[in-house]
Image (tube, rainbow over all chains, first blue to last red; front, top):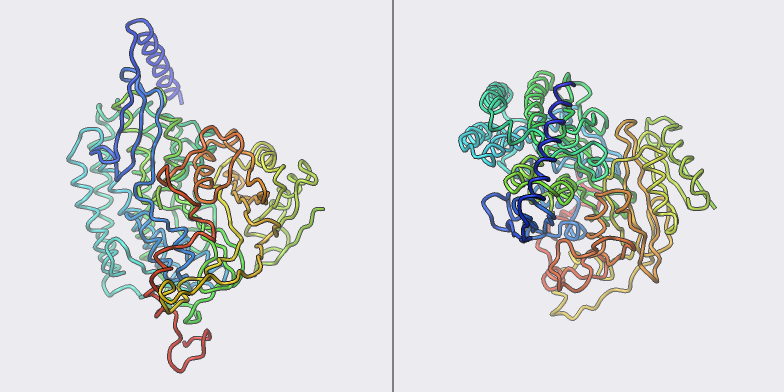
Length: 390
Length: 223
């Protein structure tokens, strides 16, 4: 803990010195800068209006909505199985993970439980989506810091995982594989062996990135002590997932909420980091990919046999009621509040996506930081535009 | 004034001391502010408070009950859609001149309700792993509620979304502007009486997916 407090002390002295310089040296004129909606340093079309004083951000105002697709309205005219297709497009890098909480909510209202094999395969694909999603972040973060190579490694190794998802579900990005009561299909022949081989590659990728980046001096200078989020602020903004765990809050839906996935039967660990800075967020995600790979291997080994579909009516009417189900998605807590009136279509679906809350902290977080850090902080928060705009 | 109903979920314990203590904590602080609560042991908890007690309910949950994680805040419009489910229609509504249906009576969900719009928010305790769904009826005449932005930073964007999508005003919100929609957008899209125009002018091709198979009774389905 000494090392951390020392670092914090240094950061404090540096910030004091910076303040003094600004006050003493020159009077600056405020300037408003538009970052985005189309800008190489933004992911998708997030526009941020920043007010600058010299190199320092005085105020930042993100403007989402360039990709708003109105899913909450559309769900009200689509049947429960059809909603599945829509919500695949929320976080498009980990699509299967979007389907799971909605299907679980519908199952909860119908009082249907998927057979054990379906639950295991769900968990398996859920973790594969996490790997496919977060590996891209691990490479992309380096791009934002000026190192282009790691993202090519990330794309290369993500492809192996996407191939697995494609061969199991038929869809590289949008599996649309989860069904109320189970899954669309069983796993193809030889898939388990192939998956285990890919996990070796994923582990190698993590080691490679760790060697390339975590010890790198530039990486450390640009991320350590930058964009620090204290735990109480993180909770008040509803940050979740790795962003929250990087602020030292030890909470993970996979461990703490039992909703019909089999995480309680696996041996794994929830990683947290006390610093709350950009580095901590990167580090926690790197460990999460490793844990996911570990889980996938255990899931492959322990896969029970049996049916993959419970007995459900062919035409699905969900009984009247309200249910909230959230899971720990690659980006953080993803939940659906489903209100049903005993109809073919949901009455209201509130989609609680992780990135929406994760990015709502930006006006607070960017105040006082330097312009180059704006990009790294945004990258370290890791958002998918579709997950903000829905 | 307060009423509590409890349902047994299958296999869950009949009592849930942790969630019960949350209800008691809220009732103890808010007294008449708690209108109703609904508890599914081992699963979830709903507490409905009055509009006046909305801000206090948030503060009590955060400071005294430990639910410091702000999950989301949103609105439910309980008005049955006057257009029906547009996908039911097998004809082109606009060309055939079909007018809006007579609305069905309004029914509310768990923990009840009296008004058309209901605020719903979820707060969570990350240490004890328990959450509470707070509900409050929005007064029909003013459509104004107290803001939570002073309690939870995250409420800012959620209230802006509720404002543009449902037209609910939050008194004391620092910058209640549209979040997603263009500034000159008229209407409140997530209200039930806001038509989904694409469905109004053209029947939904997906209707074939919900038609019964020949020879099979309507919703019993096959194997």
